[in-house]
Amino acid sequence: ASVPHSRSSRDEVQKNAHIVMKRDYYEVLGVDRNADERELKKAYRKLALEYHPDRNPDPAAEEKFKEASEAYEVLSDPEKRAIYDRYGHQGLDRNGGGGPGFQDIGDIFSHFGDIFGDIFGGMGGRSRSPNAPRKGADVRVDLEVDFLEACFGTKREIPLRIPVPCTSCHGSGAENGELDTCRQCGGRGQVAHRQGLFVMSTTCPMCRGAGATAKAICRDCDGRGEKQESRKVNVSVPAGIEEGQTLRVAGKGQPGTRGAPAGNLLVRIHVTPHDLYERHGDDLVAPLDLTFPQAALGASLEVPDPDPASDEQLKVKVPSGTQPNDTIRLSGAGVPRLRGRGRGDLILVARVQVPTKMSRKLRKLIEEMEREL
Image 1: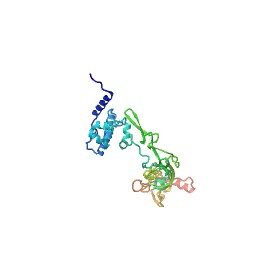
Image 2 (image 1 turned 180 degrees about the vertical axis):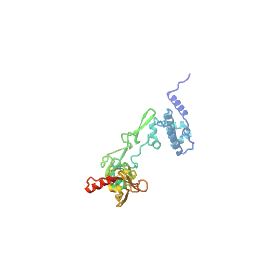
Image 3 (image 1 turned 90 degrees about the vertical axis):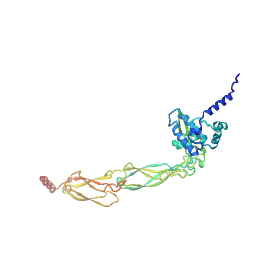
Image 4 (image 1 turned 135 degrees about the horizontal axis):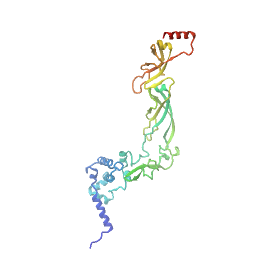
């Protein structure tokens, strides 16, 4: 009579069957058995991009993703790789060092956070160390300038209140900079939530993505990690700038931490209107007041250069018979071109002034002119 298998013997049979069914790890990654660490990582990155569940909706993709992750986990570990090369899957299983069989994709994210940070911009990977250098944030301000200042350029001193890292805690918010690894995310800064075949990674609510929490709150900054600092920044407003454009002043934003570069100061320009001039691109438009005789007979006049830095008087030749709203163009007397050479034009629009009070003699002369016309 046949003897029934014991429970332990059945488990051993099932385990060995599972081992037999596994594909060769080198075959899974598509690499030679002599592949170095760089080749292994390159092959794994390629498969991760192809089969990551967030990128590949195929139900089979998740299993292929896990298979590739398991292969890379073994072959990237020199000790496990040596056992696998000599004894195969069964040797790993007996030594308790292989066949990791990740329970879920969150485990994979945790194990290979550096790789997924490179591939997916940090999705599901480890967050940056709280003590790692971080570039400072950009600071945005609005600056109001006069019309002619925008046209011909100016210099301004801008007062700022900028958050800077607390020197006592080095920006960590912890007393003396002492931190503990976050208990909720294990230092990753992110927690994974599975939704069907997809895994969504969100910022850890306990450490807010830092991966660590303070042992004690810094007393100098009340745990904020920063203080407000007053400073003044000199800004050159270039000639020809227009309403709504933004100036970028490199390195004048919030300071970086631990030697990282500062952010930038972004200055948004607002231009106040002018009582006399209007701007059409690089051209300036202004009225030219003429007496009736000047408009009728023509005249040689002078008008000031719109540039506040110039004392020059511009010569204007008014042709005879000039009508109201006729234009006279003075080439090169307009707005300096922001991204080019030279200036636009100054366009003068004729406004003929009609006298409101007349002497008897003037009235008589106009009446005689009327008869001639």
